[in-house]
Amino acid sequence: MPGDEIIPSFEIRATGPVSRAFLDFGKSTFAEAATHVRALPYGRTSKPDQVFLVLDEGRGTCSSKHAVLATLSREIGEPLPLMLGIYLMDGDNTPGVGRVLAANALQAIPEAHCYLKYQNQRLDFTRSENPIIPQLEFLQEEQIEPYQATGYKTERHKDYIREWTEAQSLKKSLEEVWCVRERCIAALAEG
Image (cartoon, rainbow, N blue to C red):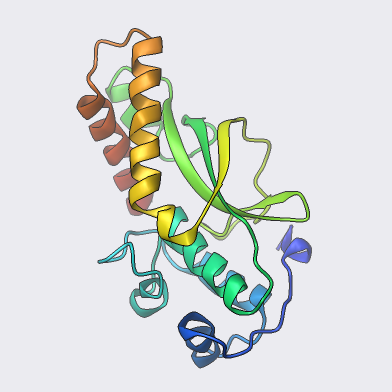
């Protein structure tokens, strides 16, 4: 696939539970592991804070898929930065959410997205397309730890939505905007 040439092909050695799990799945390089994760369906695992469930349950979100890959990269001694970026999600840059946004009188909504960085490239293994993130305009970016891809990410995301809602003078509460966001995520999982 386009962009696959940028995926690092570090050898996987059994140095921890995640690296052993990928080896059990027959993946011997980081590139093979990343391609495997990218092909898994989009969906939340039963316990998002347990990264290995991406493999056990065969699905994941941007948070869980990238947290498991970041953990793998650390276990094999080639740590890749796990990033949290916030961008304005709309029907163009995130196909499948446009109708949800329109039904709620919104053109866009802030979305928090996890991805990895390698050689100054943003790599996204959430879906099966090109892993190089297109020119999304991130409003904010920060490096996080794999364990922060759940609770911290959610709190940071809600803080940003609260500030954005106030700055936009929306007549919607944080809870209302968060519900719209959850419906967008559900639409992505269905699509």
